Amino acid sequence: MEFKLLRIDLTEWRAKEEVLKDGIMRKYIGGRGLGAYLAMKEIPPHINPLSSENKIYILTGPLTGTGAFETGRYHVVGKSPLTGILGDSNSGGQFGPWLRFAGYDGIVVEGASDEPVWVSIVDGEVRFHPAKRLWGKGVVYTEKKIRAEMKTPSEHIGSVLAIGPAGENLSKIAAIMNDKYRAAGRTGLAAVLGYKKLKAIFVKGSRKIEMADKKKFHEESKKILKKIMEHPISDALGKFGTAVLVNIINAHGAFPTKNWTRGTFEKAFEISGEYLAEKYLVTNKGCWGCVIRCARVSKVDSGPFRTPVSEGPEYESIWAMGANTLIGDLKALIKLNYLANDLGFDTISLGNTMATLMELYEKAKKGELPEDKAKELLDLLEDIAPEWGDPHAFIQAIWRAAYRDGIGDLIAEGAKRLAEYFGSPDSAIHVRGLELPAYDPRGINSMALSYATSNRGGCHLRAYSVSFDVLGVPEKFDPLAIDKRKVELVKYQQDYFSVIDSLVLCKFNTFATDHTDYVEILKAVTGWDDLTADELLIAGERIYNLERLFAVREGHGYKDYLPKRLIEEPLPDGPAKGKTAKEALETYLPYYYELRGWVDGIPKKETLHRLGLEEFEHLGA
Ligand code: SF4
Image (cartoon, rainbow, N blue to C red; front, side, top):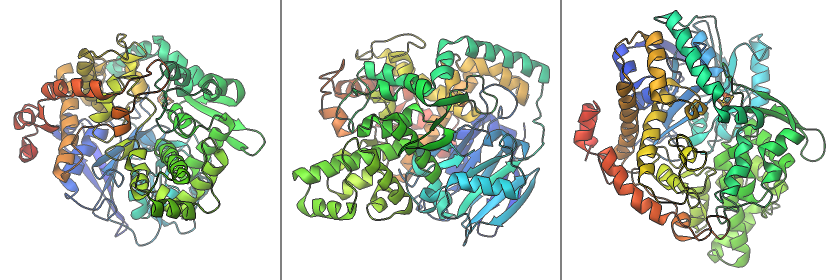
């Protein structure tokens, strides 16, 4: 299989093609795995992520755009300005397939431009366009202008990836957006594009994706489709979107509320997927090639939160900007979601950072911050009073964060730096600098291990152990019971999800499938006729270890831990009342290291040999 990269040199405004060898693709598959490998080889150790030496890899996978289901995604990799280790993020919409149709399987963004620029790629032709008039503008306006210039008004043809003012102003919690409302949100990689002054990329083309055996591909594709369509979770996601989880997670007492000081939110139903469907839903929508169609299209017709027809909000956005800040008005959350997308923020990080700000504000007023820091905070806030549950203060703050105005300059840095600056580091709930998502590990104890060992920082998408602790997939566990079999499942998910992110598929496939389901379809596309299920899973394990080695190389980010609040403060309410995540983490971690072949978070040399990572042996324990 040939994998064609386009290297875009922004310093010189030049582009060149490069064909990757089949051996590299088979070892790292594509997407996340290939990005991790290229980043290890090409990004020098210890560089400032916001420098021209950093690179951004925008990659598809071997199944992207083939017509197989749930394959309309792409993956972004680079050194994260938020965490200082390897960052990556995944997004749906249409950009991934259209990038392949435009003639390339991936883009490597290198160097840095002196002035704002956007790039068009149409059937292999690459052009650089000055972007001064787009700089400072929102994502929606940017897409509209670029489509007009490319004479491609139909949103079904071609795709635009863009950053908003947040990325331009180097916010460490900025998201790379595409198709206006889809976000590669996590780890702040939009700030790297902002540093490089790359405002947007437009892709369009008519290239057909070649495959080794088309007939077999269609047969295998149908088998996977049947599994996805027959799974009850697929049906629920289509009807109510990801926010179908609000009531479920709240009922388990694991719905982080008021900056992770509680596990239940009394207004959960009013911000749920069911309520959204009843009140504000226009229709549902899918990424390219999707049959589940979990995306929401919503609007608010009138009032202070009037919002045009737009996509979202998702479960994570509703939670982070809602329960975690005590905002229980869905209209306000639709508005906040729209603004966050248009200005280009990661809603998980933004919601957590605002919750941290609200806690700091409360502490400042109660005299619980160092005196000088309390005074500085109150001065910087000017006319904003970020009280718990106040959407208007949130809206004011979001604008200031996007343009780094006043207190916005610190909000743009993310929760960890904000809390540290004001002398209250434990007010930020993060792992490795990445703000945590919407599942409290005190109420779903397998998430303690998932978060602590997640290579890109605290994240639910490296291992979604909610699937077995709450949803009963593949089997039901008690979310509060300590059970070492959960460790085996977390490790399996981390390896399997590495495969999924490298094939660049939607994770919602994984409720209905396991790694064995993708062997035959991958053979049909790539011609790797002797591929086995074991080889595929080992590729996932290789990728997981390689990402960990990037952190080892940087000299930090490989210690596995949880925020102090989750270890020391018992939940005060709900079914998990009285629980912390301490016992789970202390029980699970040693067994996890044993299964992984790691010592204190660092892969052993023999593990690296077993996984074919000998060239990185010097980083092993
Ligand atoms: S299930 Fe949702 S996120 Fe996944 S491909 Fe479909 S619309 Fe996109």
